[in-house]
Each structure stands twice: as structure tokens, then as C-alpha cells.
Length: 372
Image (cartoon, rainbow, N blue to C red; front, side, top):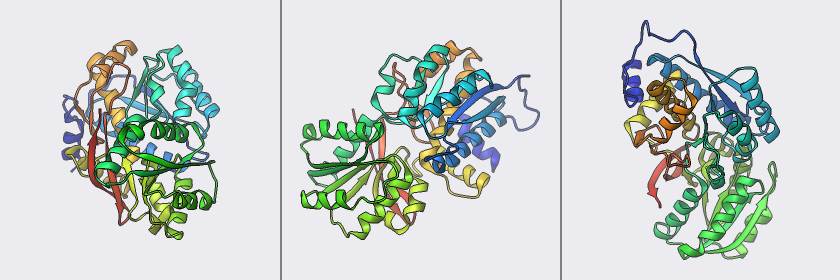
């Protein structure tokens, strides 16, 4: 079974799979991981680390010698920078598997650029790859793609036009809400009400009821942390609201679904991956379940793809940072767990997203949406 799974997952790398007596180099290529082991986002990091460690295992079984060194960013921007400095100064890393939180990516960006450190990120703020840092490579769709997918699906598939927006007051949530305000009128949709909240708020009743009064037909929830999103979903159900719910990727991740329980059933959300939509996804899902005895979290799988993309680049050009950077930028039509990757000159690798519905505790694909 392991051989079958690995042949699917690493066959795209164009190398031979070695299971015994792999010809590994004497020194491992050290890859740092900057993730929230503690703090507000620690729940999601459990899945991030499992995905990355599985990639490390598969890459090494394929003949690489990669060592993953994890540093806790404590779910904060200062923590992210401190963790990066430890990775550079103490661990002496060659490359970095960076944060998923956009504010944390911004916090480390200057240091990444200064040290010319190949860094693969999950942050979706549009500006991350627009500020002249040639060492950042995004492995998820950016927020402009996510918002366009949301608006297109609301108009063409749901047949609705009146939108309410609920968002975290942090940079991620505010940035997403601003994009909705900007792009909705261009799509022929109207934002009838916009409300925000602060991380760890416990009562969303006022915002949710205000949307009903405003005549909303659908609420877009641009949330950051699973705990907050789950609380909001439970209150949305308790209030018996009739407008539809469409969330950013945090609305259908494993941690949110677990915390929200029955309230998550029927929730619509954007997802990075196409559940069951490719041999790579299926093989990864089987490998993950075999390794950890549980279902995969699709939101976390970008960590797997990122490390495997890095492994491919190192295999092609060797442990030379400049050459690895060019190899990633030149990558075209790489079939990963989450879909196809082709990197634009500014470092964006994904250009589509999926709409899913939570059914029986799992995100189920409704539609893959590609936008310009």
C-alpha cells in the first residue's frame, strides 16, 4: 500500500522511489516550519504539522534527505519573527515552510528578503506577493480569487444578490471584507450590511440579527480562527436565521467542524482542495489516514504540497537558494494534493478554488470555480 501511495504522490517529481538503502546525501537539507504550536491558532497547527511531517516522510522515502525543524510562532506576529530568527540563527535552515496567517507573513517578510530564504506560505492577503519580495511563494489561492469565487457562486449558482458581510477585525478578515465591498458591485451584487468582530468574541447575536433586518439573502463570513467561526455557526443556527451562510476556508476546516458540531451541517464554504477530485488527493487522504488513524484536514494539506514542491526544486537544481527560487517560479502544471500549481512571476501558485458543503462532518465538493 505504501509503495502504491508513494508512486502516485511523488511520481510527479520525476524521480525513482527508493524504499530501502536510499542513496541520501551525508547532510540533510534543513527546512524550517513557522507554525502556531501554542496560542489562539494552536488547534489548526496540529494538522499543519502532521501534513508537513508526512511530506517529510514521503520525500525521504523517495530518495531525499530533508529534515523538518519546527519553531512555534505562538500565534502572534512578534512570535513569528522570533521563530524565524531561531530557525535562521540556531537551526541554520536552507528554506522555510512559512505561516498561514497573512499578518505573520508580513511580519517575517523583510527578514526573509534580507536572508534570501525560499519561503513557501499559506497566507492569502493579496499584497503578500505584490511588495517586491522575490522569496515568497504562495501555495493557496489569494483572497481576490476566493472573493471572486464566492461572488460568482452566489450570483450564478445560488441566484442571490443581497449580501451581508461578517468579518474578523484583523488584517485577514478586514482585507477580505474590503475586497467584497469593492468587487460585489462589479459582479452585480449589493452589500446590504457589513459587521465585524474581534478574535475570541463570544456573542455574535447583534451582528447576525442586523443582517436579517437589512434584508440579507446570504452572509459571507470572513473568519480567521476556528474557535470564533464555530461559535458564530452555533449562534447562526440557534437564531434560526433564513439567510444562507457562505464562509471563507476557515468555515469548513476540521477544527471548526469539530467545535461547531451539528451547527456546521449544511454550511457552505470555500475550500482550497477538491475533495476526492484527483488521484493525488485520494492517495494523500489514504496515506494520511494510514499514518495518523484519522481523516485528513484539507485546509492543512498545503503544507504537504509546499514541502513536496520544495523537494522537487532541490532535486532539480541542488541546494542553491537562487536556483531553487528559479525552479519554483518555472514550475508549471504540478499536480499536488490541492490541485494544479503554476507559479506566476510574483510567486502565486494557485488560481482556482472550490465551494464545499459540510455533510456528516465532512466538506463535500459542490463546484470547482476558476476565475480570472
